[in-house]
Length: 185
Ligand code: GSY
Image 1 (cartoon, rainbow, N blue to C red):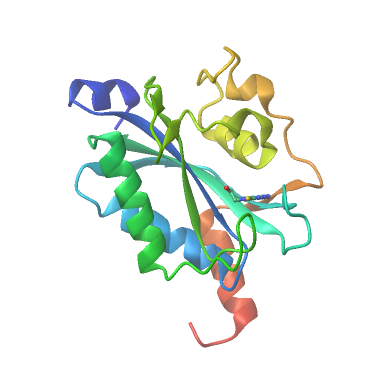
Image 2 (cartoon, rainbow, N blue to C red):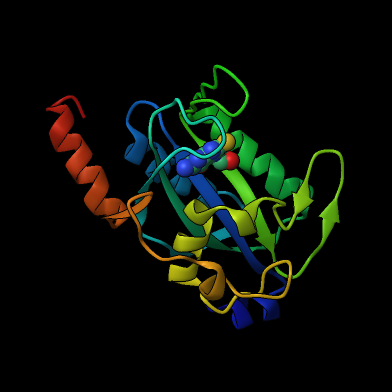
């Protein structure tokens, strides 16, 4: 469904950033997308490639796999946050320390053109315009989307680099990861 259709149907596009840097990283991303897409009021409309990215913030941790997905969203912001947290919980998110390694992280980046500031949620995501691991995949699926500060994802994305390296589609990267892990799934 296009963004225009989503609005007509009472929804709006929501962009989520997903990241994983422990265990079967690609499978965690893929499973999170499936869980979110199965949620009433959410339907997946676009997914970027998977990128392997240098950790930002705490740098002494494994590289992440990151992607950005767009959903047609008929949920309130609070309901969307609950859905994101539920997906993290169901994938048995492990996070040993704040800003440290995690099995799956689901960040709400944008919900239409809404501005939300509550103790639990800030939308647009306050760090998104400074994070190339968000901007590069976002620019792949939505180069024209306007971000805080008035510039677009396409303008702010630095493109692929050694720090944000495109690995392939979700299906390709999951298949490669499974083959590398052997026959246990
Ligand atoms: O909020 C995202 C978690 N995170 C990431 C991430 O997903 N990717 C990279 N490359 N660095 C990160 N630092 C944090 S915190």
